[in-house]
Image (cartoon, rainbow, N blue to C red; front, side):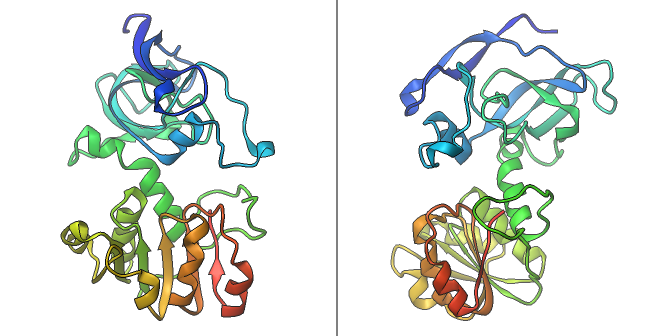
Amino acid sequence: MPASTMKAVRQHAFGGPEVLRYEDAPIPELMSGEVLVRVRAIGVNPPDWYLRDGYRMLPPEWRPEVPFPVILGTDVSGVVAAVADDVAGFAIGDEVYSMVRFPSFGPSKAYAEYVSVPASEMAPKPAGIDHPHAAGAPMSLLTAWQFMIELGHDEPNPLQPNRHQPVPLAGKTVLVNGAAGGVGHFAVQIAKLKGADVIAVVSGKHESLLRDLGAADFIDYTKTPPEDVARDIDLVIDALGGPTTGRFLRTLKRGGALFPIFPLGFTDAGDAEKLGVTVSAT
């Protein structure tokens, strides 16, 4: 077992990056069903900075209570340092990765030298990728998978009345906005894997990467607004989302679907209904 303290990035108040402090913190106490992981790399995701600034994008009544000091982060890759007595399947020295306790509004605690992880939320790190690549995968890949393949949970979405339903991809045309980002580049690969023709919306410097990942066509948004040229699309994955996501409605076929990864701010539900377009989030 390691010593009783570790280094971690903590915050004691909400705010910008300036509230983050690199300081000593207690090493997590190993509980039943958990594994202690020596962290080698973390992934940085939007929920991290939502928590850091106090969830200001949410209505006040939706903002969760957050206990300070808090350690941000959910996505980790590392090496098993200790295993609870009741855990089977993992041993000290195993290379593992995880999305830890999401959503939990504080207890995930990934920005640290050590993190305790429920064994049920952990998996062996793929041998073919290093720790930084493994840590960059869990939340982004799971988000794309839930939107496009299988939702994987029954929690209601307060922003819409109906449960999210992925749509068939084989033989369809899928446009991915923000295709070079975390969720976006996985969405391109999933769509290609499932037999779709993919149009990637990114800046020109990312064209070669996105074509290597499977995009058949490419729109450089710095030169051409994608909503001005894309037509007859079956599915738009808008990895940016927010108030501007409605601009993609005119790119879609009747019966098509618009999936904004960040749905807050979408105000064009009436137009979507008139156009016969399904707008849905997880």
